[in-house]
Length: 226
Image 1 (cartoon, helix red, strand yellow):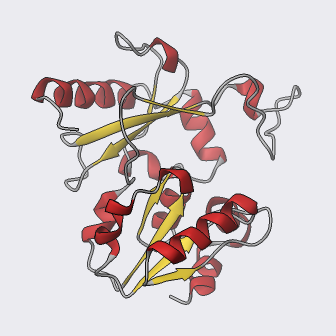
Image 2 (cartoon, rainbow, N blue to C red):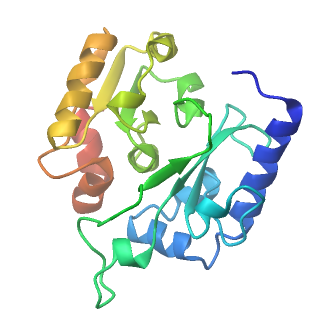
């Protein structure tokens, strides 16, 4: 789908406005809880405190812009919005839930009409013999902060075969599935789609983000053999 220049400008405007609301917001608290505070500036994370017209459904959500190779707010392909409502992410006593509870609503929302896209395509043009393919934006961020370049998709159902050529030039593509049934399916599917893939699922009940939080970046790189 080819976008008009005005639509592209609207995406850039939205990303900038939401990023400007990040500091001191629930989004900052949440990202720091996930050990991803350093990712905020690099990935231009935002918070929807004052929705733009047509964005009322995203109020109170964390905004994740899909930046394009320049990695600046002058190139935004789409924005995804994640629920961080305390009712869903915390216990009544204010402590963080290990397993979030998103009842009667979707954890992530995208912009209407936008197709699945690769997150963090900057990694695809970095000089590296390997790259990670993560199951989600936060796992992608965690891998990058740990020193392993990565791109990501929201889940196995978001994979499109036209993504494959972008990974063809790497010696190894670490398929970074979660340590659950969906993650196993993700890893198996990517092994079928990418001839240079190396199944690299996380241990049971862990994803990349949680593994690094528990074990550290060195242990993560050692697990991948890099």
